[in-house]
Image (cartoon, rainbow, N blue to C red; front, top):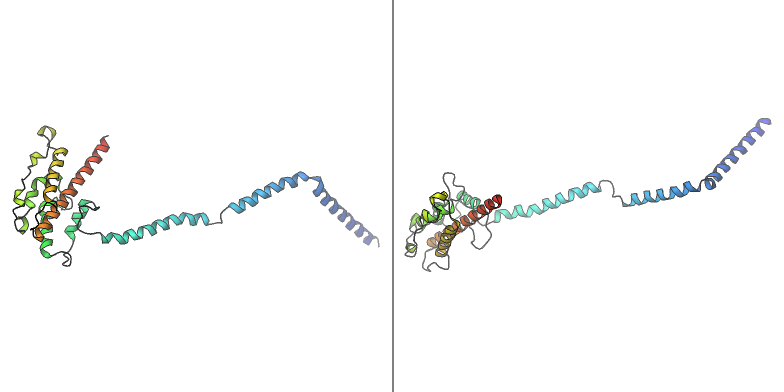
Amino acid sequence: GQQQQQQQHFQQWQQHQQHQQAHFQQQGFPGQQQQAGPQQHHQQFFNQNMPPQGAYQQQQHQPQQQHAHFQQPQQQQQPQQPATANPQGANPPPNSKYAKQMEEKNDEEDQSVVTQQIKRSILINWALQPPNLNVLRPIDQLISTIHTAMPPAFGVASHAYFSKFTPISQTELVLSAAMGNRPDETKLKKAVRKVRVFLHPDKLPRDLTTDQQYMARMLWDITSDSWEEFQKHKDELDWMHS
């Protein structure tokens, strides 16, 4: 009987301790509960605004995927570029354009065998720099020898119009010997203008054959591209020395 009374007293004492402890936590330290509130609020705000795990890695991959998607149309459009340059359009770099034309095979649907022979003769004998034939000759060399690439050159029939062209000598295009015989930009510009006006489609006679027209247009294109390449190289040198 005494053991049962002792157990009852012990259980009552435990209940009394638990009640006091709960009352002590509710009223004894109100500051702690108030401090816990802001911490919980900040933690909830942080959890709500943080992106889910792995989302940042997905965002990093998205620009690469968009860039790859943007490159695909360009790769598909590159083979569609025309082989023959348009004087009024945007052209690829002259050196790569004419070097590529040297490697092209004959396409009888677009050009005849005779036209292909004319093109190769102009590129090999006049336009491209030997021995590799992968870059254009300097503009002063092309201008001073362009009369050798006009009809009746390379098997194309002669025409009275091309005999009216006055050849331009190399000495007319360079500075004095004291200046190292370097090309004079002012003299070159004047000579290039003379050639382009002479070979311009609006200035050519209407009775030219197809081969004569093709030769004149090709000489016009190469001269224009070589002049643009000269100006680009000069601008780069001026920028480096400035």
